Image 1: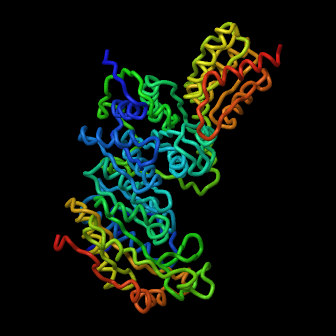
Image 2: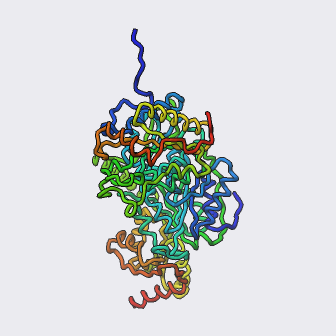
Image 3: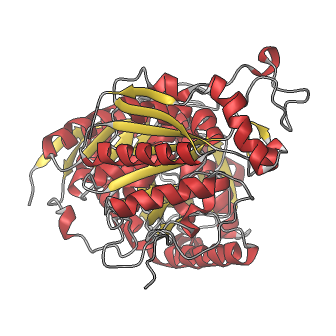
Length: 249
Length: 355
């Protein structure tokens, strides 16, 4: 008799991802959907995807989805959560969305301690628009708008949004993870689970930053991109718990 | 009947909104509308079942309203001219996603930071959509404290009925001035008709998406035509205006809001001098009350449009009349408030030209 050991998560629609080969979004989507299923919150979950590569998240997540304008997910999620405090509201945003055009909304949602979970996909580049510099692009890293690589003098350095949020009172749990290896993926899932649990326990704002490969815009193979995260990205964006006022939950 | 009370225009909007079942307000401080924000802070705190958020920006405020509207709540934000400019992105998104919301613009002198004096310089922005894309907003322009209360209730009703943002367009004078008002009985928001499109979790129903990204041009076109047809329906259904002493008039002054009150004084003075002048006051600025204007145009062929701007609504007057009348204009942009005497002088000039 055969035993089923792997299947599509209940809250992922039966649709093929449009994401490029080797992109971390597909993994992050799957992890979020798995956790929603495991915590049995699919019937009360409302997701707020960004403008960016993940704008089409509504094609994949089989939960209620509110599409936000570029950078405004935290504000839209705030409005939803305040009206429905008993639902589980999550924002899913890329680096340009959350750490450039939406920085203010993010910091102030965190400061108010909004009971939302934020998943921040950091791949150091504006993917959907074709590889421009993101707030998280590394110094020296090439992009279509940083000829010769990102320069401190011309462009400023990479922005550590998670560390900034660690200073904000209303944020109770901030962790940076990655989806570039099996071990890191397993840890990422634990962090996503914890973020949802923080919200379910009504404890405050939480965010999981997910370092995510973008082989297309990094002009690497998927394997090289995963390696690049370990060798370069984590030097600026270390994988760690940045703030945890919650402990075991 | 409820008791008559004396309140400022900004407070009237707040109380009328609460009575209309508004249970979500997000705003950002800007003069001359702060009394409304403050009123909502205290009202929501008192009610217990409402949300007030002092947002970090106008942009955040309108996006919070978007979220609350998606969640099915009657929601409102307010600001004054520069802040309304910042909200335009959100208003475009509300229109695209067919979301109800009420936005109050307590206009001040502009462009730029301008000043805090009453002005009507945002007419184009309000009636032409303001943000990007091919859409319209319902725009209501109250002319008295009582009408502020009545139109605030209507704003929420129209927003829900037509699933569109509705703007209440007033100015600093309307907002600050205290007038007597009788409020309607409060609506219990839990008794409002259910909205079968809101996001509250896919429990026992398929999951829903509220979005405005329509990559297929044919799908986007279909949305635009759908909105267009709704705008046509709104144009037929809700045009509103007031006429004053027009039945025997040979000249009508056309003005809205504060300007209309000044114009009414001028009309009274001109009448005392024996001039057959009336007043036409648009109450809905979009849809522009073309039908009733054309009705008085059967008899009246001379018009004086008076605005607290260099001339914006005058374009709608001309578009409505299509040449069937002589349209004069008098305006004071940037904040100065004309006197009835001043407008009477403009009326007399027209009679002198004709004499």
